[in-house]
Structure formats: C-alpha cells, structure tokens
Image 1 (cartoon, one colour):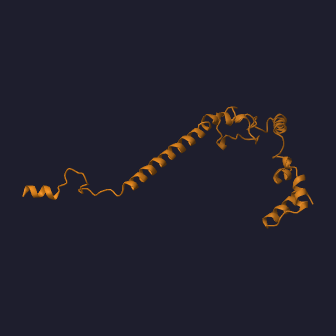
Image 2 (tube, helix red, strand yellow):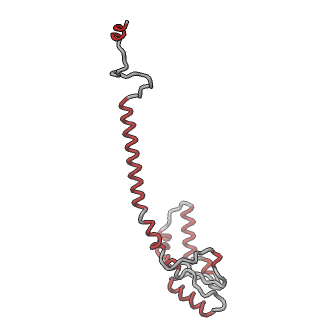
Image 3 (cartoon, helix red, strand yellow):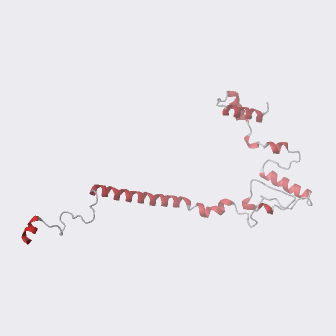
Length: 174
C-alpha cells in the first residue's frame, strides 16, 4: 500500500473515532512531510505546476523562459516582489489583470509591516491600563455611594441644615 493511501486510511480511522494502531504510528514517523506534492502536481503530464526547493524552481522557471522566449512573458512573478514569494508564476500572457500591485519593490513584508506592528503591544497595554483604571474608579465611586446611603430627594432638608426650624423657634414667633 502506498504511503498516501495509508495516510488516508489513518485519517478515516481518526474521523471515525478510532485510536491509531502501532502500525499507523510507524507510518506517520516514516512519512516524508517535507516532500509532499499535491495530487494535481504529481498527475500533471505537462508539468505546468511543479513542487520543490525555491532555488530549483527559480532555476527551472528561468530555464523555461530562456528555452521559449517567444512563448512566455519574460518575467518570473514572485521572484523579487516583497522579498520573494513562496509561489512563482511564469505565463504566456501578462498577469497584470490579477490586480497585483505593480509598485512592490523587493523589500520583504516584515520590514514593511514592522512600523505598525511594533506599536501593537504598547497600544494593547495602554488601552488595558486605561480600561482597568476606569473600571477601578467607577467601582470605587459606586462603593462610596453605597456606603453613604440613598441620596436624599430634592427639597428634603438634612440634619444640621440652617433652613430647619425647630418647635422652639415657632413658639417664639407666635
């Protein structure tokens, strides 16, 4: 049984809830994960899609461009854009219709995004601190208000207020 078929059987067993056997574990240990090809790559008779090391793929793309200069647009898309991509394209038509940004230079994406990414952690910590402080202040105010008792209604006089009159004060005015 071929290795991919064995892996498919292991996956089916796992989806059915069965535990892998010792033979299944041995299969996983011997599987060459670094050389896995998609079935379409393996089956393509024209080798239009190929899989491998990036340096080897670049060499093959340039070899094909040199061998058939009238057949291909003389550009390997993905070779230099944003530091080089993991997918390379050669084509017999211009790929500009794919809406790729034509102004991308060869500076890698991490260098482009670092100016923004380096601000993320301070923003998270700052907002977290601000939110925690607001939560504490509101909780403190609510606790103090609860300890002070219910607020008095407007127009009610409180003890010690100068507008209070006592019975003695009323008797003096009669």
